[in-house]
Image (cartoon, rainbow, N blue to C red; front, side, top):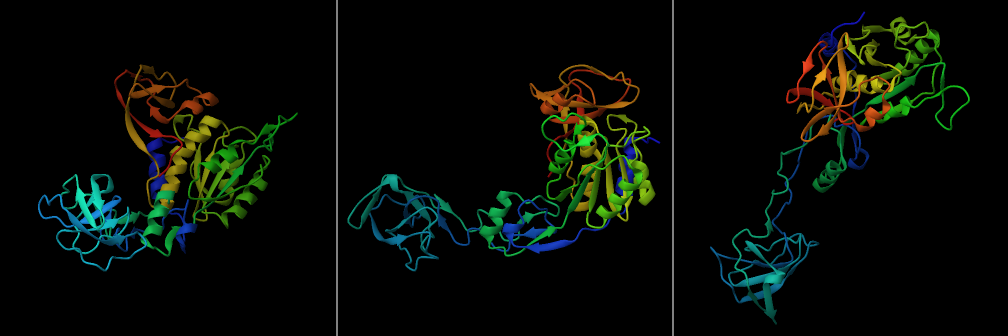
Length: 390
């Protein structure tokens, strides 16, 4: 039985799933995983005032003076802090990233100076604070570095290492993808018989932050599918099946899931999404994807990212409002998914159809449009972005 999309979302929100374990890993092993807890900066960066340019550290009062300054030594990034305190009328050579000597409050860039022996004259009068990176200017102690469920990116890794963080809390998130279908053969050169199993690798690539296992295709055998689900459930936090989700004699996936667990819903009253289902097997969520490309991708973004959001405690779906660039008449018998691409500051619909692979090559988002309605150019639509998750 098909249910409204809003009811399907409520059932996912109300379902109880197994909590993910949190691991403590060195920062270099946290890249590409999801944060398991809120992490705040344990220190400020920089810890001391640094020079933002190659030049000379000086002490100025108000607008200062043009010198001459007496040059007193040098400071480089390898030093923790110069020992010499800089007095009025004195300058110290500094390179970018070098700590400023006590008493200095500005830097004059090298190209704005000239000197002879130990005397320095400036062609520019610096203001207090000029070309200095103040303590805490990059990041302050207590600032949020990672939010729960956030995907740890290369930039996050760099900041963690700069802060000297030794361990990072990360979620242990494991997924198993099970393609189903007698007709499926391993991808490769065209085979005399069979359909290349291309959706499994695609779906596995849509699971950022997961340790994903892609199983070989299973035949349309409800007993074998049920057994495979039972085995996979013991080591996975999310199960994703592909194919066998419709109502034909060989569509066995939903029956196999119901035999081992239970279905939250069999499908929704939205064209393209209608055969996608969600179930539970021993508190492990199971996403049932149709075997058609457009349906599989949009069902994953609609229900799959919803399930992942529940697991990691962070909404991974990226929704936005767009302006429709042309009229759209929804002549289908039920609400329908449309693919959109950006055009002239708005969104243009792409040709409709569950098998239109070329549409997905160009699509940037999708939206659910109400059946029987004619949408006019200039209307604002709520859509969800494709190919990304936070």
